[in-house]
Image 1 (cartoon, one colour):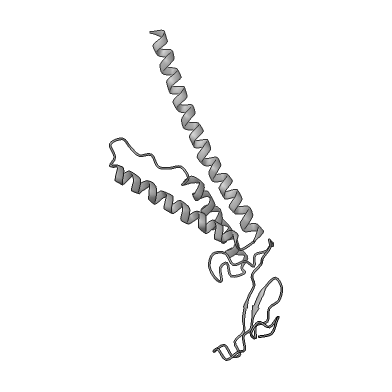
Image 2 (image 1 turned 90 degrees about the vertical axis):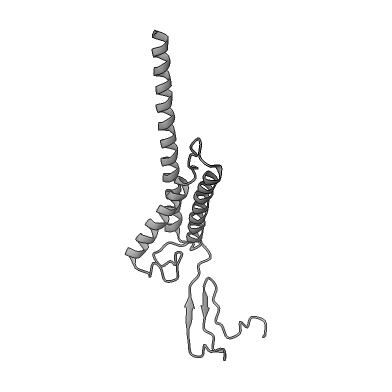
Length: 161
C-alpha cells in the first residue's frame, strides 16, 4: 500500500466516504457515512442511533426533546434518595447505587448525543442541565425556607408562653 492509498477507499476531508471495491465481498457496494468533526448547525445529524432522526425535521425536534429530557433527568437524579431511619443498610445502599447507575447511564447518553457535534443538540443539552439544576435547587430552597419558617414559628410560640 503506497502512501496516501487507503486500500480502495475514497477519503475526503471532513467526512468518511467509503467505497471499497476490493475483493472483500463489497464489490459494487457504495457505503457513505458523514461524520462531522466540528460543530455544525442543521437537522441532518445522527444522534445516538444509526439513522435517527432520519433527516426529517419532526424527528430532529423529537431527538432534541429527548436529549433535553435526558439532561434534565441527570440533574434531577443527582439528588440522592433519602434513606429512612431503621432501613436495612444493604437495601439503602442498593437503592442509592441503582439511582447512581441510572444517573451515570443517562449522563453517558447525553455525552454520546453531544458527540454528534450538532449545535442544536449542544444547546438543548445545556438548557436541560440548567433547567434540571434549577428544579433541584429551587425545591431544596423551598424545603429549607419551609423548615426555617416552621422552626421560627415554634420559637415564637415558646417565647410567648
